[in-house]
Image 1 (cartoon, rainbow, N blue to C red):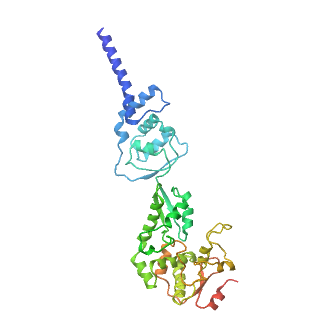
Image 2: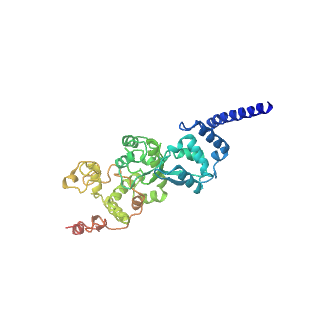
Image 3: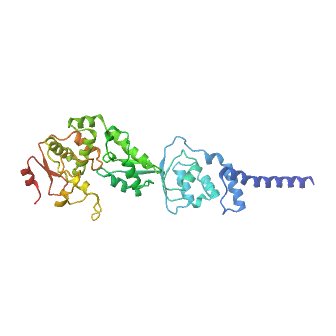
Length: 364
C-alpha cells in the first residue's frame, strides 16, 4: 500500500511538473505555435527552460554587426548551422528549438541581415522575420536639381513623398546665414551617399543635407570664393553651372575660369545649363535637362536665362559636388572667355580667348 501511494505521488508530481513547464515557458517566451502537439509543447518548453541562459545571453556583447544572408527556401537547420559556423550564435540546436516552439521557423524571410554576436539567439530569431533593413542608403548625385532629388524618393526606401520634400525644401527658416534670403535650398542639398533611418522625416532629411553642406563649407572654400569676389550663395550658384558644363572633372577649373573672366568684364555668362533649368521638365525627352537646345530656347523669358540677363542666375540651378565648388574657389588662371565641346564626343572642350577663335573651334 505504501509503495502504491508513493508511486501515485510520484506520478502526480511528474504530471504537475509537466503541466507547469509549458506555463512557465509561455510566460517566458510567449505562447507556443498552434501546430504543435501537447507532447511537443512539453518537449520544447522543457528544452527552452533548460537552455534559458544560452537563449538570452549573447556570445560577445561588444561585437560589431556583419552581413548574414538567408537564401530563398533555405531549410531552418541550414540557417542555424550557418549562424553557428559564422560565430553569431553559440548553438544551432537551441535556435532551432526556439524557432519551432514559437512558429518563427515558418516565417523566416530570405535576404541580407546585419547580425552580431552581441545579439542573443532570441534577438536573431526575431530579426530574421523581416529582411527590410532599418536603414537605407540615399544617394544624391552631383548636378541633380531639387526635383530630381525629390523624384528619387519613392524608390529610396524612405517614407517621404516628393511633394513633401519640395515643400519642406522651399520653406523658411533654414538656420544658415548664406540662406537667409534664399527662396529655397537649391544648390545646398549636398551630393553624397547617406545612410539614414528608414523612418527619417522630410524635415530630418532636409536638415541632414544642409548640415552636410555646412560640414564641407571649409575655410579654404570661403577664402577662395572671397578671392574671386563671391559670397557663399554666389559661389554655389556659379559652381552649379560649372557642374553641368564640366563633363570631365579635371576641366572644372578651366570652365570656372571662363565664367569668372566673363563676370569680371560684365559679359553675359551665356550658359546653356541656365536655359535648360529655365525650361524645366521636358515631357517628350522625360528629363529636366533639355538636350539639344534649339534657337527658340535661348529666347525663353526667365531670370535664369543668362543669354538674356546679366550676371548670375537668381539661384543655383542644381546641387554641385565638391569638385565644382573647389573649382570656383581655385579656378585655373586663363585668358579664356569661350569654350565649346570637342567634336570627338570625349566630353572635353576647346577653349578660346576671342570670339573668332571660338568660331573656329565649333564642330562643322
